[in-house]
Amino acid sequence: MNKARALGFVLGGAALVLLAAWLIWRGAEQIAPVPAFDPRQARLSSATVLNDEKPLPAFSLLGERGNFDNSALAGRWTLMFFGYTFCPDVCPTALLLLKELKAKLAERAIGAPQVVMVSLDPARDTPATLKNYAAAFDPDFIGVTGSDEALAPLVKHLGVYYLRHEQDKNSGYLVDHSAAIYLIDPQGRLKAVFSPPQDLARMSADYPVLVR
Image (cartoon, rainbow, N blue to C red; front, top):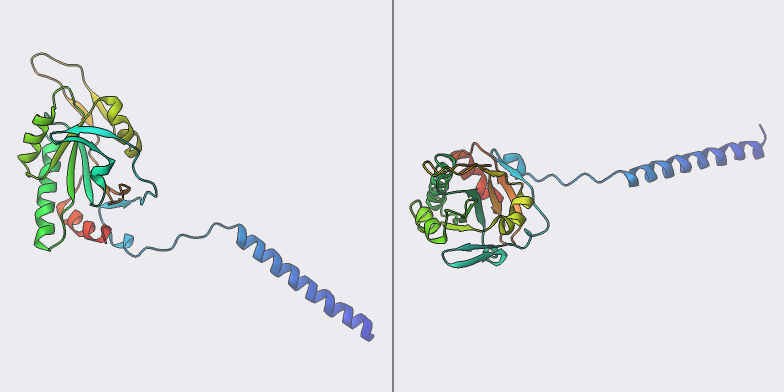
């Protein structure tokens, strides 16, 4: 084999190596990057972490203290629950759980979140009624409500389900509703969801991890 032919083989081989490297680089460039692993999420046992990038949509509800809107979420962690004061089981159970969670956090010197109950039954749950109901569990708990139109931004964004049954003059009526508890961060963004059935021990373990 003469020198010219040997040189041709060498240059050809080098070109193939460069072409292969370029193809590999282009293929890697098109693959979506894998999100960085967050070790905190591996330790959670009851919460689904969502980490919304944008704040909750603009909303305005009514409570005993007046309007309750996005500004009421700023600068503090909030646990938000949807229900109604005539609820026979799910709502009192959830509010009792949140009361106990607050006590557990206090034992560990962890700042307690703001707790907000959003009523899905504005016809019966007036601001005064909500204040008395929430205060029966904890004086700092907040109760707010609004018309279906006012509730819509939060309900749609958070995926809250509710259905009011036909009214009965003698026995009143029930409202079917979802029972998730939503954690909102100090920038008013959805951080995580505690789906039912909630457990005090697991929530009290997850909450400090989420708010770091």
